[in-house]
Image (cartoon, rainbow, N blue to C red; front, side, top):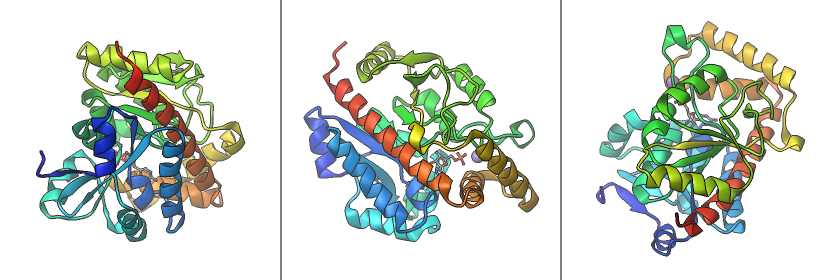
Length: 306
Ligand code: PSU
Ligand code: MN
């Protein structure tokens, strides 16, 4: 494992001293936003982690290594390369490493890297899930299987709204993954605070969540947890406008025959276009909000002995 894992000295020192660390993914940088907004956002998110008492560890695959904690040069490189870097989910890892290519990590791969490095808390925008029409296409994100097996808590604004939220919740239930709401009974829908679906449990503070994580993992129950944190009211989108944009994006996707790993980046980019860029601003604010909660959770988690 040592051969492939490269942990930044600042991150390693924090881990050795039992300090709070928050993992961050890199596909949102490469595939989620245009340059230079993506670089500004990546740096802003790392700052938010520090301001909230934790150490950030953005993760990517570079030159044959899984890098946990990136330098500013590495972040800049990823941001500039954009979609030229390989969106790396679990099945892509061996190829990208063996060929010494550059890979941006999805939720699944960020969880794998975080667990190997010893990081329990990870913040992102939204998790992948069961795509609409999956009964025919079988398009179900590897993020869900990862949540079943890998011991990392994923702080997100819910399941990406372009997906089938109801089927994703059923799938997570089957896999035994708790879906927690932060100060809400209702599952947020990424760009909006409401979805019409319920979370499993409404959690009121980071300590309560840290206690739940310790209970799960000390018992040896493998797998992750979804902590769904609603987008702040001021940044949330209009539900009907979003529904229309998503429906239209899916129509265009089907017309163009876009499938597989291109599906999620295409839909998110199309929704951004159809909302005249407004969804991108929401996306940035919801990730910021998740990073703040994840940092507070990481601080509570390292102090919790159960
Ligand atoms: N944000 C984007 N584009 C993306 C993703 C996030 O703007 O492609 C990634 C996330 O990293 C998430 C992944 O884990 O999409 C899910 O993709 P798939 O459905 O192919 O597993
Ligand atoms: Mn897929």
